Image (tube, rainbow, N blue to C red; front, side):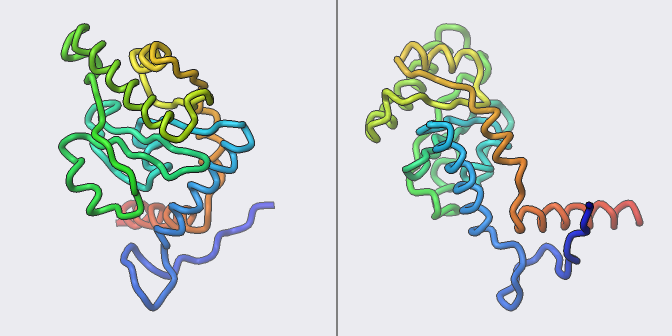
Length: 198
């Protein structure tokens, strides 16, 4: 049976006198949800690109004008590592204190620099990921990957990293919405309705 959601009694601003969207709680609940699924699937880490995945895992927005300009290495039992675009790497840590580990991202801009530079950058990318996995004792574990191109996948394989498709896991995690996520959806719907009414 369909049940209507609770009435929305506030707008898009924040206030200390009313419980509205609690961004910190939303980030924590998203991370706990994906970690539960990772543990169930026996997946120790996920390497994710694309804004829908990276935003969900880290609570961050980043450079999105090219694929793989930034990415997140997310762990079931450790804090995530954010590989930020070089142009954003300095400012983002000041804006997102909940992320403890920052690195500079490697990108081959969909092959724009040419085949030789693309291969070199992809090799460095895979080496960076390998270092992070080794530091946490996870180099022999399977790495879930989502949102990366074939160049990245080949480089990870060449670096001796076993990968698995993490897309189904991300779909399952994002299918369930928390109270804060539902509130965000209601705010968006209200804005759209006001626009159509006008």
